[in-house]
Image (cartoon, rainbow, N blue to C red; front, top):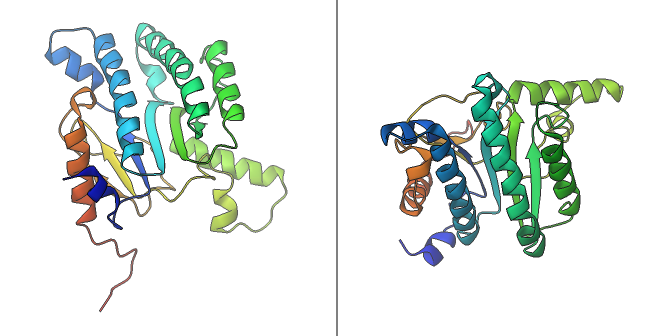
Length: 239
């Protein structure tokens, strides 16, 4: 399908998320180190971000590293932190120039994250806070339950007595983002893995079997077309 025609379709989602899964398995199937899969996966992140922007989707969330991923071997987590450091450097000038707002969802006070990565991430968020063309949300050291507890504790500290949905959502990492329409988890695994339990209450989910490094432009278009065929009722029944 022609991208220009697709992006004009009113059924297109406004906010999508990728649960990036399968980098290590993709490499293992090719007899390569898991780090190779992560590197190819990082390259695909850049390609998919540009495609999402080309399609006119305004918000993109990427589940890159969960708070549970620290259980992996230190050699692997150290390599992933190196990739994140490089990613921030590569994105910085480009996205400031292109009016892109960068959000980092997750606990960036965690000292397991190298200090240089924490500092660069916080500065990039500050430097892009007023950008309006596109929002890119990088979920690193992120856990959905932890996010909810963070919001609750912030409200307690503010001495709030009664909380409604709108007030609660102001304390989530995604406070400035549109509702999450579609979650795509690659590699065929069908679980949420602690990803945005509040935000995904009415999201649509798609589970392509391809591992993340192999997930292509055509695969994303296929996922979007499948999403647009769904009837999102949000609990209503339309006669």
